Length: 482
Ligand code: FUL
Ligand code: CA
Image (cartoon, rainbow, N blue to C red; front, side, top):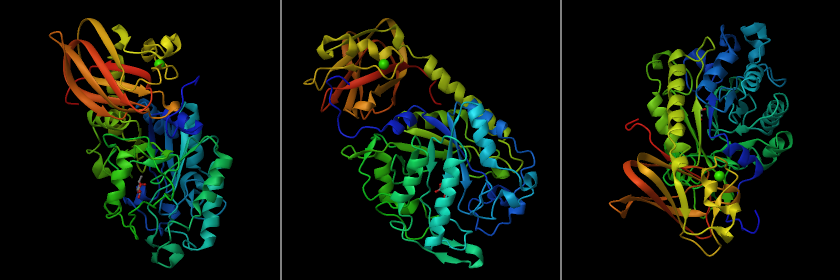
């Protein structure tokens, strides 16, 4: 951009597309839905998969009602059962009674996503507790063949999701034993990623080690404060964190990662790569549907709180919606999604920044191109910037009358990097500036809760190592105690 130099790591074109989505959904659906389990052992018969009322449009409409911009489907979970009719295994929908073995969940969900304007992504578990050859080179060939099918047969994908859980006990074609793999070398990840790069150049690859999008270090949907967009990704692969456990089990998996999870949660201000975090969480306690959790669906208020603590910290919010054994999203989940979307809309509609008179302590070359007006034009591609030697400028918002607000929102112009270290918010009280908080990190989006404040002027002072580039600022009022 003109003569402004970028700062540190910057997002790739595919990451920029992904940043625009902010919220999208996960669909966990497989034999577990019928066995009432979270992890299948791999010995489940395909005959149990029979979602008699399966309705992709109902599932995708539920996601759309919650404002979700895409869906990632568990095409194959750890149990190895394939929701599409893979050429390379019998362990799939082709041997289930559903649609007489002619059904394809991946096809129906991806088609419906396109119909409703949602992006589509795939989850393919590297770990396969069904496959007889898991642990040998032959399984890698199988895994890559499947990846090839999923990345060529279902149109454009926005994300490919790799789980870190890998290795342990399983059915393995009847061997029923424990198999451990070397997670650093077994998948030869760079060459596995190459399949995705070739077939789906716009798709981001997710795992706890990136390379495009990183796990946020917990499954509660909450990013750290601060949460930097950067991290050094050298040596990091799915399931290969600094303290990854040797053997996975359902109970110990998340705990065993502890020291690495802190780093994933906060990111690294000095990291060499742009690897933003994704905050995954389920709308219910389980990832898969369990009838006894029908009354444990997250409330709209709770989902909104997660939105603030994920999207509002520069990350994405990945919300899991598990279909029932009939193949539908339960009414309770649909109600919560609708209520949550209302709260997000209410936040956006409360933005008072358009009523403010704007001023700034410095504007780059005093040029209109970098004018402070760019922070309220609802366009993320325009921004306010200062001269190169200005590292602590301020922006002032003056209102004709006093306003009440409790959230301040900011966006950096991230194609130029994450430039701002911190920012302070002051409000005018009895003709004096009163500080109400200092916060670290902005990135793609920042929503800070300031507590309810009444004032006629707000001043935001930035601290950065290079001139800041701020694309949007918002001043919001949302009900308290959500
Ligand atoms: C975890 C898996 O083990 C869970 O079953 C689920 O798929 C979740 C999203 O990731 O690592
Ligand atoms: Ca703008």
